[in-house]
Amino acid sequence: MHDYDIVEGPVANDDVAARIYDYLNGDITKTEFIEELRFKKPMHQICFCTTASLQMLSSAASKNDSKILQMDDFLVEQLMLDNQIDETRAADLFYNSKTFAQLADESAVLYKKSNHEIYEMLKKELKI
Image (cartoon, rainbow, N blue to C red; front, side):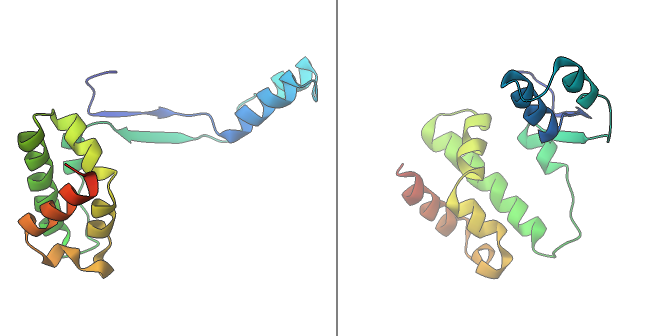
């Protein structure tokens, strides 16, 4: 656990895990294993660790994005208030829900419903 909004840096790819498995199973020698670990292609990741960092992202993909983001804020806040949970737990519940997946899918046009209608759907899904 940490309090950073964003963490970025190099990351190992799946090739490393496969090589470790091969070495531990005796499929390759120690020398081959070390050679396989040599730097090949850079892999980089950016991890958005907080709701605040995600809210800083902007997208030109859709004119409906700002409405959806406002709904996100409302829904997370309602989960916090109604269930006396912190923002991290509320955001985790919401962003891992089927309701969020439908809201994020513009073809489902769920964003045209009111915040309260969507919140009722979310409560039903989460059984709260």
